[in-house]
Length: 130
Image 1: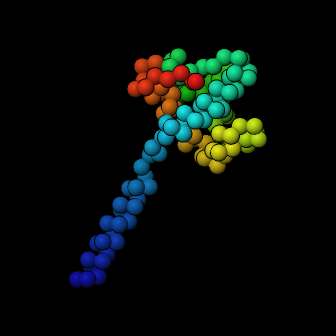
Image 2: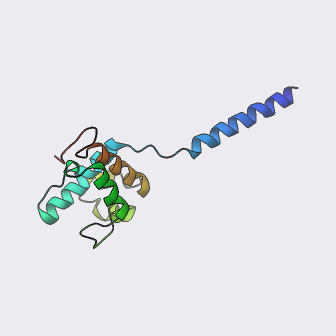
Image 3: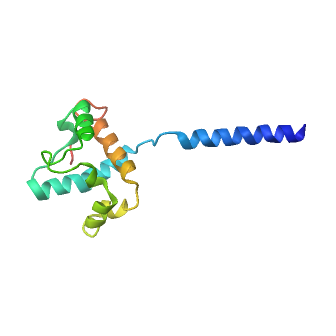
């Protein structure tokens, strides 16, 4: 009887662990805000002398932009700017890139997306990039 109970408890624990690890990543919009402001905004200011705030687009616009994965009028990929390789290339001059150097690419992109959606023109907390 004790062995049967122990196996039942073990099976329940394994099931709970498997369910916990199968859950999707819960994006951190605050980390996304830091990365967006310190990496995206600083690059835009250096390259085109224009800040581009998340409140300049709607949630649907941001979702479509990220899904299309086209940056700089289609000349390059949005995803490349969240890659570890890109962060490594700018970490000497960018504290956020250095701070988040080891964050998984997809997690960082999800974090920034959460910030953009939250801060969009029609988001819960519209925000500029300043």
